[in-house]
Length: 204
Ligand SMILES: O=C(O)c1ccccc1N[C@@H]1O[C@H](COP(=O)(O)O)[C@@H](O)[C@H]1O
Image (cartoon, rainbow, N blue to C red):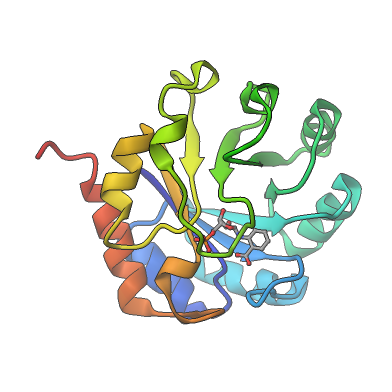
């Protein structure tokens, strides 16, 4: 199970996610209680070892702006929420970056198709809201079969195993569910989440 922990803003929280076994860490570079500046994100990269992917998260920014901000922060991966096009995917790749394309669980069927992104992410209606949804509703979508895609929205250390199994997800992403209060990460919850998610692959 691929695990991304998002909305990290301190070196301690990055280290906790990495030591727990996270595969990716997310830095929010758009309006959010978890926002960090490009220079803060750049500083946090010192706590990210090779083999863990640091990802810059954006919502409504045009692709060119997201690419420029991520580049300024020293990031090679960006995660784009909001309405996007196949041309946007090509622009990210033309810029030499990798892309997580986020769609909401109620998106039109064509948005779940493979547009060439490196990973698809399926999220609740409002990203970063902590809102759970019917994870099983996407399990049988033909466009997802055999794909590498991440489940997000309302996940936490307790529900991540059942949610990922219900959705047949390849990986998971979390922010609110590992916080003590909005925007403030809880180190014990980060560790518990990563361990629960990784354990969700094991036979029961
Ligand atoms: O976390 C945010 O504040 C955020 C803001 C704008 C776009 C994406 C954001 N985070 C993404 O939202 C989900 C996590 O949701 P939840 O809080 O766990 O329910 C995940 O994909 C984050 O990368």
